[in-house]
Image 1 (cartoon, rainbow, N blue to C red):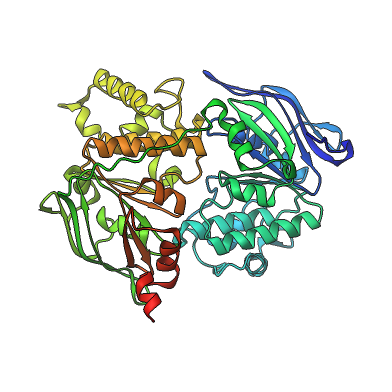
Image 2 (tube, rainbow, N blue to C red; image 1 turned 180 degrees about the vertical axis):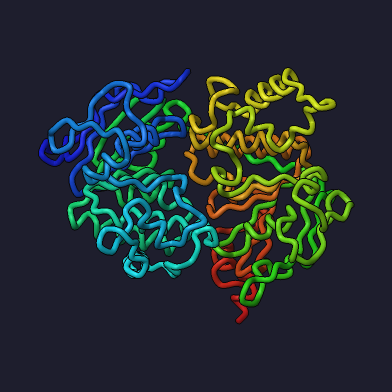
Length: 514
C-alpha cells in the first residue's frame, strides 16, 4: 500500500496500549492522522476503536505508548487538554444534558459571557442558531434537548463540536441516528472542514459511506492494528475481510418460524401530537407467534412512539392492544412487562442501561422480582441465571461483575437483550437493535432474533436500514407520518417499494395509479 508523506501526519499514536481489568483493549497500536483528510477507523465491536479515540480526546489515558502532535510528544490527560491542543470529539453515545436547552448544551463549560462574569444567553442563542443553520437543522436553540428526537440530538452534538476551534475532529458514529438528508448535510460539512485544513477521524459501521468520504483507512481487530491503506486503493469487501478475518463470510440464513397463530393485535392505536394531529395515527396490525415483523420508516415516522404506546408509556394514547388474547391496553409499564411485553429501546445508554452498574445488575434490573424470596434476593440463582444468559448470547465480557461501560457497543446491546429476556416476554419490541454496532455484531443479533423466534417468541422490530429489514423480517410494515403506509410479505417486498411507501406516504400501488 502507498505510504503518505511524513509531513502530512498531524497526530500520531505510537505503540499505544490500554489495559482494563481482564481485557487488553489496545495492544501496541500505531495510528496516523493525516492533515486535512478523513481518517477512517474501522473494526468490529470490541476491536478498540472507541478506546483509541477516547485516548486521543483525553477521556482515557493510555497504559503505555505516546502521542505526537505536529511531531512533538504531548500528554492528553483530560478533554480540557485535548481542547487546548485543538482536538474535539463527537461521541457515539450522546453527551448532552436533557434538562438544558440546545444553546446551553452547545456551549456548556465554555459559556459566552458578559464582562467575564454573566452568561450572555442571547449571544449563545445567536451563535447556536448560526451553527444549526449551517447544519440545515430545524431545531429551536431555546428548546429543551430532552424534547428532541434522537436524530436531532445527534445534530446538536455535532453543532457542539463545530463550536470549538478544532484542528482535529473525532466523529464516532455521527450518522447512526441521522436521516438520509441529514447525512448528506453532514458530508457537506465534512468537505467544508477538510477545505479549511481540519483533520477528521471518522468511525462508522456503514461501510459504503466510509468508501465515499474517507481518504485513509485503518483497521483494528481484537485491539491490534491489522492494516492501513489509502481509501482509493481498497473497497468494501476488503474492509470486511480485514475487520472479521476468517469470519468474513458470516451470513444469517433466514428461517420463518411464524405459526400463523395471533400473538399480538393492535386496533386503531393513536397518540395525539402536541399542536394537533397524531404521532401514531390509527395504527392497526397483527403479529403472529414466532414471527419477526419489521417496521420500516424514516426518522419521525412514529415508530418509536408506537412502541412507547404498546408499553403503556403514554396515558393519553387510545385504541386497543390485545396480547395472547388478553386486553392489555391499560396499565403501567411494569404491568405490561409482567403481562409479556418487553422493549429494547433505541437509546441503549440512557434508556436501556445504568452505566454505574455491573453487567449482572443491568441484566436483572427489570426482573429482580423473579429472584426474590421473602425479603431477600437469591444471589446464587442470580449468578447462575446471568452466567447462562452470557453464554447463550455469546457476550464477550471478563465476568458478570464488570461495569457495563467497559463493554463494546455490540456487547452492551446483548446485555440489553438479555435484560429483556429475563422478564419472560411473549412479544419482544426491538427499536433499532443494531444501531451503532458493527457488521459482525449485527449478524450475531440477527442470529439471536432468529433463535428467539424459533422458540416461539414474537418479535416486532424497527430499523432504518433497508438491507436489515429485508434480511431478517418475515413480514414488513412501513410507517410514514404516524400511519401504516405499506405492508409486504418477505417474498413481495422490494427496496424500491419500501422507500416509496416511507417517503411518499402511501402504498406503491396507490402511488402508481395516481
